[in-house]
Image: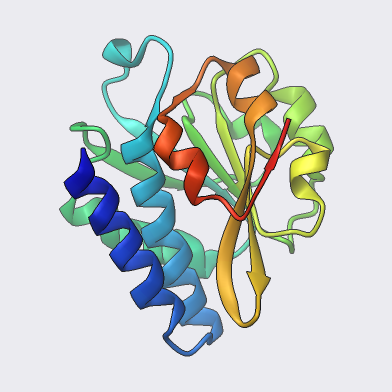
Length: 172
């Protein structure tokens, strides 16, 4: 467990020091999303055959996540990345990244998925207050993240306590 935490922290600090270009930023966020799964457990996870990561908006994130899932598993299971054009296309999704250029609001997404254990991740100011579970923010030129602990609990997604310690800010 300590080894996983050290690897996560190393990558987070190493990647934060890289130049923040739009494609590079997408790569960093994709690595962090992949690493988040090491600290989370979905309800009825044993019934999940394939982890599905949906992406609303930003194609750079989808491409970066695809590169990772082509060669790695999530929680020991295969993973696929799927572009989400509308909320009717969210069946079987376990993780949903919503980019700031999305035409669908975080609040609407959160309401529509409230009965399912879908980890909603965003990069928009105030997203945790609007219903995102995890939100990427930039502080001092570095990518950090906030966690909405209440949303995780409501969805039944269990987080390891050391994961919460890595967050820049927690929302209850």
